[in-house]
Length: 227
Image: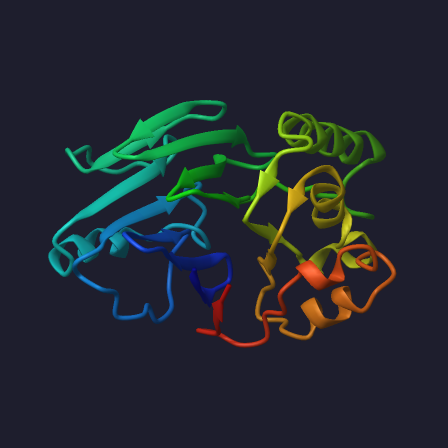
């Protein structure tokens, strides 16, 4: 698999027959093989996860399908599939499942070409110390855990997970809970707000000590990983 970090929460994943793009809203995309089918996923309508510019790709690539969270307001067409939280969709040779986000939209679980890929979107343990009340933080915690507990023990080849520096000392909570409750081979931090020192800090922290070898460091845009 060839994985390219594009920007913020956007990654592309190139498999033998297909290419997946998650949560593009800006950044430089690679020049993909036009003989491969392109699947474009958008987890929700927030400006840092979705931009209508993705629809221009169907003018460049001959075979494009969009899988969009149903909170996204876009014109329906044959190659645009809208999906709700906690829904399953069989598309070509792909199995797509969603979890309900703890913010807006969905997280994606995509199984294809003998690989299972997780993209969290904004499903995260959003603890905001000093901004939310204890009751609000507890509600957010429970909503996140309820979603992840549905996939407890599941195996993932790749997981793209928020690691948001704005959360202060609580930045690690969602990433850590996911890693300790799933069997994930390779995890990629995202939602970094251009703070590329943050993944290295996390990898060397006590929180990640049990799984640090599974976490890939994101430290610049368009970094390529072959795994």
